[in-house]
Image (cartoon, rainbow, N blue to C red; front, side):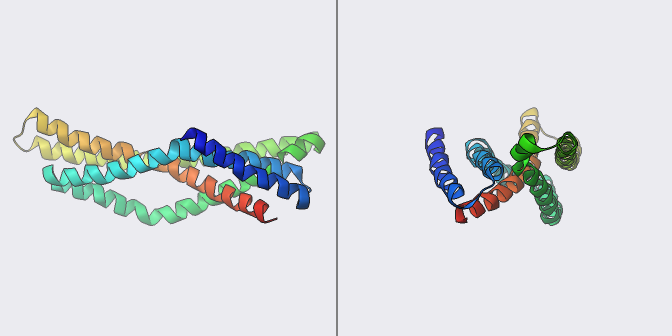
Length: 210
């Protein structure tokens, strides 16, 4: 799998570089886009299996919870319903941050070669602020998801504490909730990578058409 993806990346990059030689004079931009395109391989090697596993785990855990505790399963679906309306705005804000980040990355080589000390300092200070903003948004996403999932655990604990059951039943219910929460917790990072790939895709496509 890794070998096939590496071959795919190599086949993608070669025509991009040739196009750059013919029509684009800014080597800094091309070098940045070639480096950024490697993120596609990283995504399919690591994040895509995680995305697939998370989706299956969320669906499977909620489905199984309906056989044990329908109220908890309904609450889990409610969590998804509550978070979904905020997702487009969250993605748009991420898109803007990655647009600014990659714009700076495209000029980095040229700046290193020809930039003044003031320009270099300003460049890296801005990069730091953008990366901090991205990191803070991801952390906030984890906090929101974690807090809401904690309510699901609390609800399940309350329901189980008020009914006669055995340890195996409690373990099963909690295990399915844990699977749901753990899978949903992958969402902030996957959304960040999705925004990154969207922006890279536009840049690589622009270079390919140039």
